[in-house]
Picture 1 (spheres, rainbow, N blue to C red):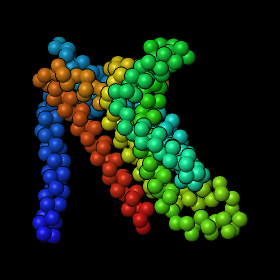
Picture 2 (cartoon, helix red, strand yellow; picture 1 turned 90 degrees about the vertical axis):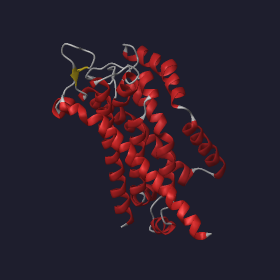
Picture 3 (cartoon, rainbow, N blue to C red; picture 1 turned 90 degrees about the horizontal axis):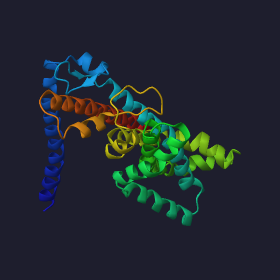
Picture 4 (cartoon, rainbow, N blue to C red; picture 1 turned 60 degrees about the horizontal axis):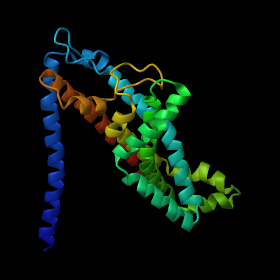
Length: 282
């Protein structure tokens, strides 16, 4: 019986591995043929995206890469301090009753569909943005705020677990030496939990980079190089989701090549998490 269970678990693990392998093969096989007609340099470092121009088509995704970076960076700047502060409060300050309530709120945030966040941004945040900064209100700033809210559950949950996993002896020793509770949190607990907190931030980054629907609804969907946080933009995921329904030929191949860029970025994030986790264990 035990041997059968072990084989079943092994088969389940192999299914997961094979799924990743097949997805990788499919994406690369569908996207790499683009580079027979378009150079990698042009694809990555040109901001001219004109896939439907029969006379002079352009397949540069630099504007999408820059937009993805800016929107994600904005989400991290807004969301990480709030998420980390909330995690510190839950782990070190909040009482049992308020902690249960806040955790329930975080769980609700994690379960809200992305399209609902998009509606929230469209109906509330974009008009406020438009009233303050002018323009349409659908821009990098609105998208960053929405993504910041969406990554909060990841940052809060993982950071709280990391903070709580710090040895109580370290906290007791710091307090015994005369440090205040706040000094202990800042100078002892957070440094000791840094690898877990960094992992939370990196996973939040992956969540923000891969988000499509909410960003598609609030970022403006303009295929142009952003000039300010109030610029309308199109991210990598928006480009794929927006064009895949009607793309054909080399246009469709270019979208798969765009997915390769996303895939490699997410892989790099995972490798970074492994490195940070391994250093934390040492």
